[in-house]
Length: 204
Image (cartoon, rainbow, N blue to C red):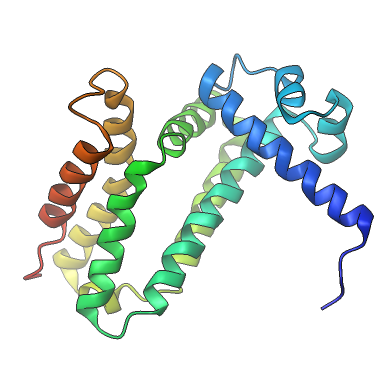
């Protein structure tokens, strides 16, 4: 593998700084109100640097979504690959989901991404492709290794449960800003664990 040049390393650093700053600004201000000037300032770069690396605010927004999605899917796959039994795989998936309670930004960003896609139909297709990418990468870890062989209605119910996990987390995380004491990280982890067990009973 070729060692990156100093220019490549600077480019990677700038992109990382811009994406990190964009995440903070999009969560704080929402997509519509977020300004590229504010993102550049938080990253310690010029507005011109944003346009050097991203075509537009929309492009920056979707690249952020794609990068964060890949990172989470990669982490889940890595965790599942260490498992040697269905019981371990299910426990790893459960731990991964419950552990998402510590990330206070991703669930809010997910809501912003979905609202963005609804309000900007011209970007909806790329957004859906990102979801398909996530689904495809998740497929690297055979779901049968987690839940066992499923067919018919049982398989449909399992897919519905998987689809419901993200929206449930986003809704609870949003509500935690209004009920911070009850829905603390500890409270969120507790209720997410109960929801997971209800959606995916161990006897399944």
